[in-house]
Length: 573
Image (tube, rainbow, N blue to C red; front, side):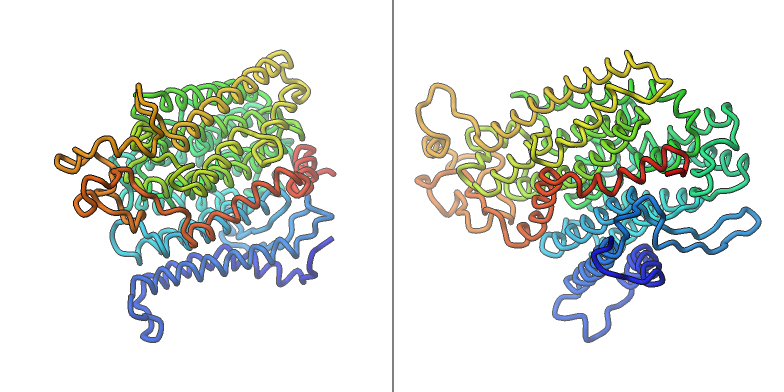
């Protein structure tokens, strides 16, 4: 069944266009704009170019999804297979199935939303031309990673995203951006070198780099020792990108320093490349090696779940001076732990849960980073103690729509039933309860119990964040409401102005009077601008899809389940 009937040749063109168009758009962004397209502001012209290219890619991805045969999601569709390096049997092989299609659409959607958001709220930094070009190169590399079906092409696409993300952090990031960017590039490059060795080992020992042929063979052409070495090498590279504890330490720094759109893309799509590699390559190509390492992968996963939650609780406590972006970054370590746990079960239930959790995390955490970026733009800080203080954010009273959206994203992240975050975690835990044959069932049930405990910790820190940021805190020994508190301290108008007050507010809170012009009778509490139209346009699709996936999980599971069943069966339906 297809939504619209599209010929195979058009499907091939659409997939090739989706992969190549962002790269061509990046090159065009660096060229001088034609006189008729420059407009009054050349910077806005290049930003408009980025929105146009990302929008065209999103439209093509939606049409591709509409033309996808949903009755046969396990079959590779829109395939292109052209010989590239005959001596090594390396081919330009593209195709999509029920596993890769949701990730392809998610990447196109998030990139378009980031381009739209940046058109109105460009992060401070060098030339907008470079910014647009880097975002489009990043999109092209990510889309290629999910579309290619050759091991060496997969590696090239996997590496293609590193340089643009490095520069987005290093040139458009915040405090400590250089150190965070170097940490990101060093960790991921070192992991990739080891991964390349594993990919070459598989290709040379099996005689092909074709991922479809290798999945169909299901490891029968590789000895157990080769599979074990390959899983160890490739798994390390993928684990760094995921990131898996204890290889995660680059992630909080990168997220904290990155601009808002950089954090959205890093959490929403780049982290998915690592877990996609586990499912697409290691599970079908080296099943014996995966079976050897599955208990260790599951153990690291549940440690990451608990560790990430405890780190968030530590950052959320009063007086910890925790950064809200850093807290959400640590929450990603926990959420990706559930994805790794599902993969480690090697069962259809667990792997489907992992794939569902991948998409849910991209939607929810992408929304969270958008919202935290908006709060930081308005208040000038993401420090939790400042945001929760008596002159802090108190979003329910000062920006109620923004506060409601932050609370929505938080409860979606903690796995509230009826929203997207619930199904992935539940299916993952069910998969751990009954892992694949040959795996230690008592051990995996222990992992399941630890993972379930992690969901309670997630709920704890998310609710603390909502209470502190959205409700604020009262001054001790005072019966006045938080809105009335700042009026009791007019002396700040005559002395040094406290950080984050209206007189030093960023441009996002336009219309708020400063202390210098308002006089001592004016409250020092910043009056936030509530949601702007461009913010609503960028965030509404994420909210709608979070609700849709939570209420109608068959939309995703109907695509992934047949493909996962066939993948685990070695290409046999």
